[in-house]
Structures are given as structure tokens and as C-alpha cells.
Image (tube, rainbow, N blue to C red; front, side, top):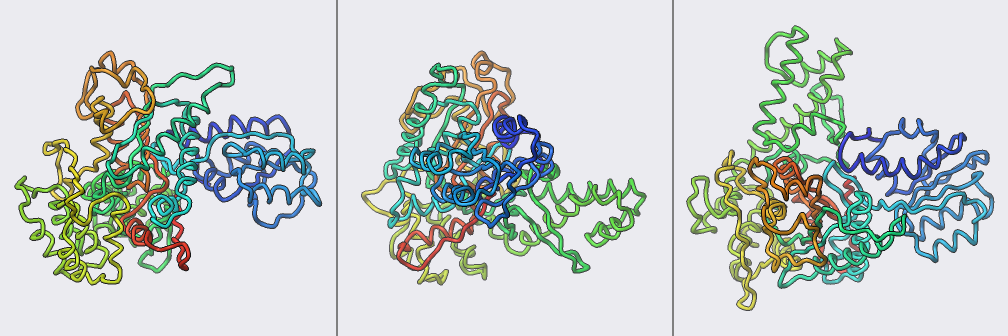
Length: 592
């Protein structure tokens, strides 16, 4: 299990768990067993470690769905999701032969009456505590949460979906538990789209459920709005950011390297295999993850050399194998160098991909995405920018990404042109990679009846440091506009009133250092929460930290059903046209 993070969502979630489950445990001196389902296992792993639980007299952690030996002298804590499957597994532990002395039951969310009554009638005498703790989201990072549901993409966007409404209901419940955990009652707004209704539907559900949740608090008083705003947008509002090759460290690594469950596996030259977790417990990862790969590649060897110099190592080229030898000779040196070795290797692998293919791709991608070249000259013929990519032996996925960027840049193309592009990329039998974007409301085929206006973007020409990283995710404009109270109410309708701090003029700039205004002071400690339907990218996650850093008075938190990579999104897009009757299962991508 992960170490407890010192900041952000993980710390808040761990405190909430301690204040409910752990506080109840402390009342009894008896050692206890903790029984978890797959979701609560991920939840606890994200915010605490085994020693934290041991310190609270929890001696064993078990899986609810695995066969377990009875321990009749011990009390069991059940921390689980309120589903029929979990409840049946719980009942199985007590109905015929009780496995434990007593049960302390904690649900992540509201337990339906029928399930509660079933538990009460069939084994009520064993239940000592029954509580709902309102945490049904995963704290992914300090300012990022997910609903741990990659399948939501198919449920919401597939034309064959049977469970779209129930999926939106579940996501709404999860967003409400996030707000409850943060003790926020935000004003709710959504991005209005002419051809898509999901953001509006989800916003209405969330607003309604928040009102019910906060109708009466523990002191029987109606809770008023807090200094927070919640914005809901659909994935189609920015199709470019998930497709581009990003050159910031975290986004680049997850795009180009096979990182599963946040675990980076690599081989040393001696053939030995190593693995490292890329989480906030690795402080070097936290320091480097949002930096450009050029800066990361320069910084890590410098850090390693500093350590080497302190150990009187000769000043020579640092390699992974030399570091391994040094670590063997000096055990005390090992801990210091371990994380640096990991990042030296990861950055090296990223740079290898960059020099092999990505560097050449990036120029064309950036020109298509931004609409101008590195000198600021407008791209007059997008097809001329795309053709060299199609003629070069890049991978099929890379070519698909470039074709999509071309189509997005011209706001949809003709049938005839699209067929030619599909033949070029040789995906005649897999044209769904491109055509299915229409399910997200993104224009692929130009239609006289459909007019799509490109959003006006902020001028960031003064901020650009790297020619191959000129694109800024649209969500960053949204964050800055929200913080500066510049969101157009026609494009971003209010579902419920926003707190005073988010209204009126006197807004602060999210991009300049500023003296706090009266309004800024009012909003100190306020939060902007943005939920993206259909998956969020690592580059969009980075924006939340950048805007928070620039505007000290407001913390930006972003979330989605899951975190996506360009490859995972393309696979999900392609799968949208499959019917549920076909023998097809979407590969489960864990984002915990």
C-alpha cells in the first residue's frame, strides 16, 4: 500500500477514513480484520500503507470475494461498495456459520433500502456498526480524482448502449461524494453544446443530488453554497489534446512507454529487472512530472553527478550500469540513488522515442493543432502539412493521430477525401478509429447542416518556450476564464447560483502575478472543480497544477471517469460501434 501523501486529495480521503472507520475501531482494544472489495482495496492503497493500519490495530487485510478461514475470536471491519454482490458475500460470512465475532460495516456510498433491510433481517445480530462514509471516487493525485470506471466511455457514447442513464447517475453520485469529502457545496455549470446533451444531463443530476445531500446537515441546518464552482464538460470539447504527442514528462511517459498500474518496469544492462511506482510518494516524480522532457533530461544526470561527487566518484558519463555498481558497493547510497536511477532510465527511454520518431511527428502535429508554424505563419494548406507524415513509415496509430489532427484542423472533411486518407493509412477495415468520433459530437464529415465554430483561444505566444510544445489544452483556457470570472453564461449556463466570490468583476488574472483584490481575498481557499465526461489526459491534469500555482487564491481539482492515453482513447473510440451482442469486451484499464 502507498505511503500517506502529505497534501491534497489523498490526505483528505485518509483523514476521512480515519475519522470514521478508524475512530470506531479505537473504541475497542481488540485486534481486527479489515475486509475489502476491489474498489475499496484501490481506495485504501491510494492513500495509506499497511503500517498505518497496523498502528490502528488492524492486523489482517482480506479480500471479500476470496475464501477465508473463520477467526471466531476477532471482529471484522467490512469496507465495501453498496452493491448486491458485496452484500451477498457479506451475508455468506454470517448466515450459516459465522466467520467472525461481529461485523462493523462501512459502505462507500448510500446503501439502498432493500440491501440494508436484507442485511438487517438476515444477520442483524452480528452487525455492531453500520455507516455510509461518502467516498466513492479514487484520489488519483493531490489535485486529480477518477471514478475508476473506464467502461463509462462506452456506456455514454456507444450508439448501442443500454445503460447510459444509469452510468450518468452513478457518476453523479460519485461526484457528490467528492464534494462531500471536500465539504463543498459548489455552484454547478456545464459547457453547452448544440449537438450533445451529456454535460447538461450530468450537471442536472449532480445539482439535484447535491441539494438532497445538503438538505439537512448533522446539526439539522440547511447547508448553504460554499466558495466552490463545479464545471462539467464533454470529451469532445477538446479532441486535440488527447491525440497530440505531449512532451511534458508524465504525459510523454504514459503515451510512449508501457506503464501499467502506474508501474514502470525496466531492465538493467546486467539483465536484472527492476520496477518503480510512479506515485506521489516519489518526490522526484512530483518535482519532475510536469516539466518538459528537455528540462528533465538535463536535470536528472546533474542530480546524479552531485551525489556521485559527494561520494568522490570521478566525473565521467553517468550510465545505469555504473550507478548499479556504485549502489552495490555502498548500501547507504542505494536509497538516495534508487529514484534517480528510475528517472534516468525513464527519461532515457522517452528521449529514445523522441529522437527515433516523435520529434519529426511533433512539428506537423503542432502546426495542425495550433494552425500556424513555429514562426507564427498561418498554415494555409493543412494537407501539405499532413502528407509527409503519411508518406513516412510511422506506426498506424501515429498516422491515425495525424489524420485526426488534420480533420480537426479543418473542422471535418469530405467523404471522398476521408476515403483517400483511410487508404493511405491502410485502415479500410478499421475506419471506426476515425468515423466514431462523431459519437462524441466531433465533426468528421463536413455537413452543410452542421456548423461548428472553433473556440477563440487565448494568445500564449509570449509563454511559448519550445517550438514542439506550442499547443495548450483548451481546459487551461477554461480554468483561467473561470478563475477570472470570464466564462460566458450563454456557453456555460448556471444550474444553480454561484457563490458571491465567483460573481461580479474585480477578477484576478490566472496568468500574472497579482496583488490580492477584495474579491480575491473573499475567494481565498476556494476551489474550482472540473469534471470531464469520457476521460481526462495527463496534459489536462498538469494544467490544474499550473493554474493553481499561478493563482494562489484558488485550488483547481480535475476529474473524470478515468485517465486516458492516446492509444487507450483510440481503442475505445473504435470499439464504440461494436454491439453488446458481439463477443467483444473492452479491455479493463486500471487507473488506480
